[in-house]
Image (cartoon, rainbow, N blue to C red; front, side, top):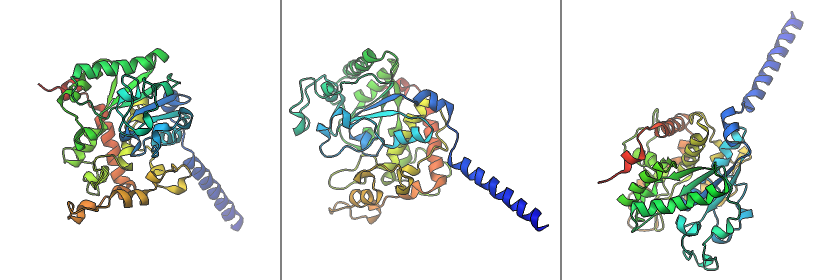
Length: 348
């Protein structure tokens, strides 16, 4: 009897061991492999992309980083790809305070003191490799231009990458700054989004998702925590109040990932966003969450006497399986929205 019991326990132990091994190595989704394995992805735009960690945050000298310092990015988007068994080359072509026209050569770049040495084509001359499978365009603002003028600029950007790879797939971002920052977004900019979609460029609207949750127009399914602006945006202090925090950066990465692959956003991993012990934690002060929370949710002026306005719970959300599942389900909902941008953003 003792031998039979010992043998049974041994079998159970082996089974548990095998199960644990399988659990640690999930089967790669073939749709992800097909869409992203070995592919090249370019994120081009401004701080709304890097601030939350969708790509690794640029440092204070971001204007002079060369192309070879921006390849093989290890931000949240790349982490999602690799967690699903796809090895990608993500290039981070983001620059704080820059509109796309300064980055892609339709005007000289003088937005940063370190940009003054650039060629008349702006930063485009430095982007020597322009052949990508996916290009994600993130605009900072287009003040004083008509929707048609904005469209012509975007068509020019698209041509740069289509000339290098006719099969490139392009995405255009509607980000939170459209709603939270007073940077010149107006009806013409929103109307241009509808025109851009008609050109076959996919609109990725993570900004409206965040804004709807902040304002109660969308509820997070199964939420156990309250959601406010400070759950998603760098809390207002003397310098900011509209950039995405790491929770929002993850949603941006997830929406882009699901849009490219067509896979369900629910159940996708996110521990790399906040667990240093994961071994893939991006090395940057912006994403050391204790530092981020301390330095970007601190009020130093008298305009914010309400202590509750100083609080953020994005780390608690990351640690809540129910709340993260709810946010992921909203990503599915907003991606599946069959309302054309023309109908959604057109204003008379």
